[in-house]
Image (cartoon, rainbow, N blue to C red):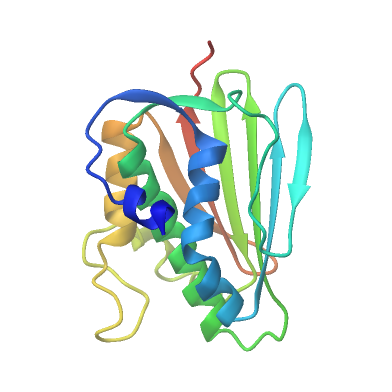
Length: 185
């Protein structure tokens, strides 16, 4: 319960924080929804000194602690992560696949952090993929999405987090890739 209460505290303080820890906190918040929809979640984290994997929807990540750092607004980054995770979940729920999997890969390359969120859902229709970051554009049916989640996520990342996001189709579904500037201490 404390996770939930603390999660939504106003956070407009620029600070340095652990991205893997922030992402794991977001996963914990939506874990019940993932389990209720029979979605298997796998998380892999890699930094210079360690590599670890967790699965079975148990999100305790003690690897790469304080090595995947960025400076920005943690509360806003949580909104981005929750939006991307929610979209991935929705895509898998509407797909007809029996085995639903969400694969997360958090890693660093020199001065960048990458967070890949891959699902085996329906993918993104190719005729609209160029519009997915437009305000009020949604691939969800009438009344199911306001079409501002991806727009807001991209805006937050570019304007407040020195980062970006892009989406692409994969052989199994779709993948969102978030990039952030890495803070080295």
